[in-house]
Length: 197
Image (cartoon, rainbow, N blue to C red):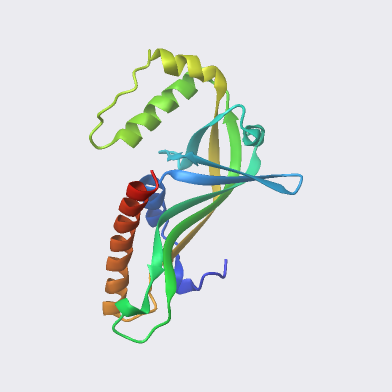
């Protein structure tokens, strides 16, 4: 891919894996009859280098998550508006962000036992590091839900890291933009939660 410019691309797969692990809520995109179907689901990156997910069988996209069908997956890290006021040099307004775009093929995993184990492992991963909740294998609510959930696995064929973090600026401006990204994300979360809900 030629965009964004190379300075804003990160080809280090370990950096992209860290984004996936830190921000596991993915946007998954399939295409049927030239129409995109889009769902937001947490995906877990496993030791085999694949993404594992679960979807409600009633979701129209569930039928497209099998049979080695192509899929696009997006992960979003922190993002925010960057005001020229934070720089030590003259700049224009911009937007900084971290995104990971993946292309791959998706296959269904039909085993109910594998689905149950996967839900338990996903819960364990998402509960880290405190593990305040443990999903037990005999949890009746989970066992009752297994008939309504499909499990799938995505084999990743292409990785693209888009890390636009003011890398083309002077070192002090890069650091200022980094601090602004942290500040803005903390502030926007607090504002949203306090004023919307």
